[in-house]
Image (tube, rainbow, N blue to C red; front, side, top):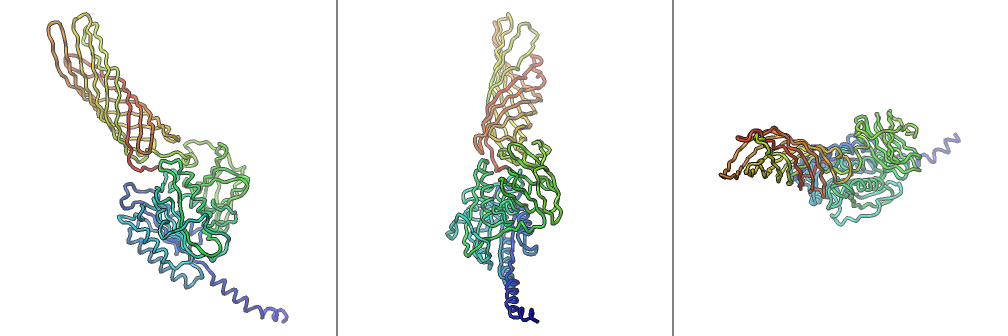
Length: 553
């Protein structure tokens, strides 16, 4: 009875605290939108939809978003986006009835300009988007926009940028935060090497734990923004698209920090111990890069990963090491130094770190228009059956070409060239001099191969081969002791032009080059001369214009 008398007076307090804790729950909603093809955008994106899907996955796995409260829109039109925003507002209002706090994350990946998001064949103005988000009846609203010129949205309503978002770890924060992948004047870039946009890729890596600078197992809004900013800027500063500076606008009041993901509470994870340092790349069983980070020595880092098989690469001190491991549900794997073995940077791991080296993609997916000009030597010699015949040939060549580059190391090419040669012919002891003007037009189809396209820098050597028809015209003038005569002859043949050269890219859209080749085809039958050898060398300089955004950064 004594213990009962001691408990009864405090029982009401316990019941009050219990009811407050039950009511003080947080419900988080997420809307992720991915649009590869936007209005007035000449070149579709490749990874906007998958970026949206991956962000939604990590928010459900580690960000506290229930499956039913997360929605992904893939290639929607404008009407569908507006409907989804309206439905999100209704869900948030209903959620506030049952929960003490509601939080919303809205994400967009796709094309945009200074005025708004380019969706389908329409545009969603930034002002309308902000008004929709402002009307959401949530305690905290976070909007993440990964698109060109997305920083323009931070200029609306007099947004003020601050050095950091929040501090501490309480949960009474109120307001909004807008994160954008670029400033209002910059292009957002995606890359085939990481199969994602730079900003979203590093944002997701950060959310999985790479951004946990405090080491408390939770990734905050401030931590993930700083991580994505540094990594995005660091990987685009030398790209052909130029440096990309993520931006933000926020208005948050109260104490505490906004936790984006809980790495420590995730069901499976990878621990990088404090003794390891360098650049880490983690690939899943499909050889897709799921996380990348630069880890300093002296502190451990935990990453939240889905159960499955992985390969991890460590690049440090000019060496590459690798290890493979398998994560079971509810398992945490610690990578020990002894598990890492030396690895070679060779094609067998081209989807690993070698793919993600920081060299720009210059050619892939682009169109090229080229003017070339130069000289020829050799060829146009004839055997007329008279001893002492001697022919010397030289001339000029010029033309234009069009190329399309399906890959960084391959260019498919068609060219039209014209050449003019003049032969001065002295025929033995006879007092006869023959002057021959030879013009030729070649229509050639072929390809160039850039074997060192993976190297950084603007200089790209190549080898080439082209084939097609040659059209010849001979104009003869003979001056002898008794007469002067002239004649014209025509012939056609099919030939081959192997060659090599080097391109020097002096900007995103301009290149100069030097090439050499050898025209190889059968002797041409010319009436009165017999078989004529018009094979010869050719050396040309060129200037090119490259169009299209391409697939590179």
